[in-house]
Image (cartoon, rainbow, N blue to C red; front, side):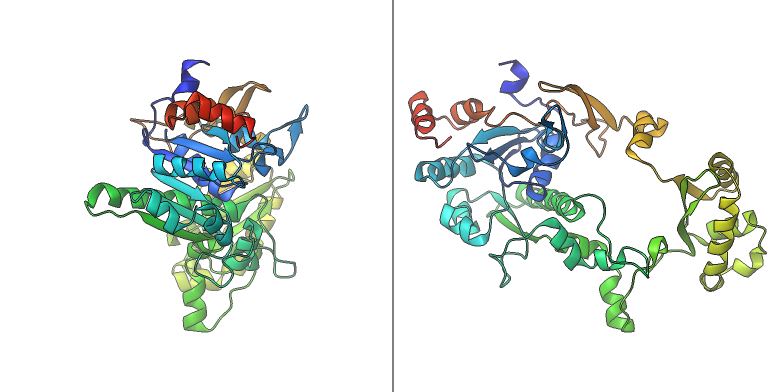
Length: 405
């Protein structure tokens, strides 16, 4: 096996951090992905026969699923049957090895398999446990199943998304799962900061429900309801509670969609000037809010009469922030994405060179990097179990013989 596959390359902010994931599909593994991209050693534990369900999700090329090539990148894959007593014994050794334990199983299953907070803390008192579930470990629905779209629906986001005369709309990707994974990674790093500065650190249990991260990000919805007695409703692209008077998408004479947004008094006045409207009628926030319908109507007509390039050049000259609505093809061909190095090419054993997102955010002194695509199921069994956990050759052979790994 090549050297880079025996040892995780020493790049990124989290070199030396040890993470084990008893987590499948999107939310938990995405939290691990954020850590793996920054150099952490992340061990993804999967059932021996089927593996993570994420391995079969999404489109395929020549029978090879594409999504997992990104979702599983920079991680180690090991197989382990947690239904088996010997498998649970190995899981204990993984917990003892790790700094971070990520779980997405239901509360009852975690208890029966020894992966709940009490068990993890007993095995490894300094470990940080990130537990992601549909409804949180402390709710009456702790044992109920949950997926990201349920979290989106409960968060308030879906109620706010869409047009007033249409149905509520989910975003076009695993929004709830992805944001939960991102907040989970943030929470883990917050706990690690305390571990580094608190001599009495006694582990940490992070309990995250799938609806909570998006709920937190819609900052104004609770206080508006509480103080004004209002239920914010769908407003299309203008937003139910908007930071400024001009926020919408408009179709150009070429048939392209352009987003125009103005979040300051000055930028809204720039829009008024561009449209030939008297600026003194849009001088204050109150005037701009009162005139938002007129601005929207005039801007829609103005853009419809012009080609996309002409519109964008005029917006640039007027210092009005606007952008075409990008497709995946637009992203792939965009010079700014290229200048930022946001798309990288990685060699994959099944597909050859593939392009995917780079490690984001960018660190300039110690950047992370993509050193492998999603691994084959159980590809790292020998490395993790023999070299990292110290199982003997005889122990590993016995586990393989009994289909535990």
